[in-house]
Image (cartoon, rainbow, N blue to C red; front, top):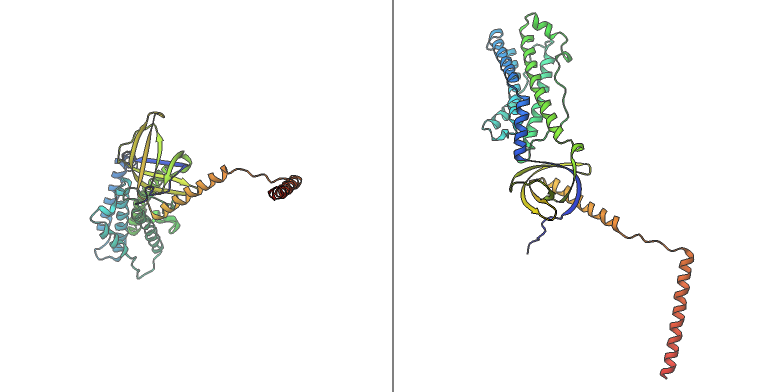
Length: 338
């Protein structure tokens, strides 16, 4: 017979935050509308047009410089494509071009210029900055939970600044130096998407700020949790769950499998089964609930007071007198028996 209790369960009080898929979808729409306004979209379209016009007018088709600038622009476009999907919490892996775009970017290398110019460190700096952003976004996609919940654990990276590499880039651009004009526009475009990434991460961090989570009493196991609530949840509703266990923050996805009204308490007992949880997180939950049960057992254990030396001596004498009486009774019994 299989184990009826598949998971070890125990009542614990933990900081907890959860949202249903419907709530997440509403939040995503609001985030997208806030971050990608019509004004922002028009601004980015104009930037793209200006860049393409400069590509066509300022450089011959076989220009090595043009090839470098087009490569940087292509990488910024890849970053933009990933961001637009992630803002809506859409899994880029479901897009038919995802694998091709990832492979294409992985094979991209910064060409070595025949002549070392003063703006080459700036170009290399843009390339490295894009490397970092694209690696982070691809990690977010690969480490997502069920392709629905995207996590952003990396710290914020400062927005790229041309002045860290070239002090007078804008002055060169204003004087009609074509490479400086293109680089200024590319950096402006990169900064726009960097700002979008920062705001996306800030929205995520606001959600996972455990200091704002309510401490709730739940019956927790590696397979799911249950809790009492005045709110009713739909059966099989998808749910994103964030919980703090000691120093660890756990994020997982589950579904509502129990929604029973308790008349005596006027609340609903809601059960959530984890659907997407890593083995590491499941083990952390099991260890946590076992530790909590042990701690509670220790707290409830009776206190044993050791007797003083005098009390111990008196007890010894009483036991000795009792033993002497038992010996005498034995002797009397034996004599009577004879």
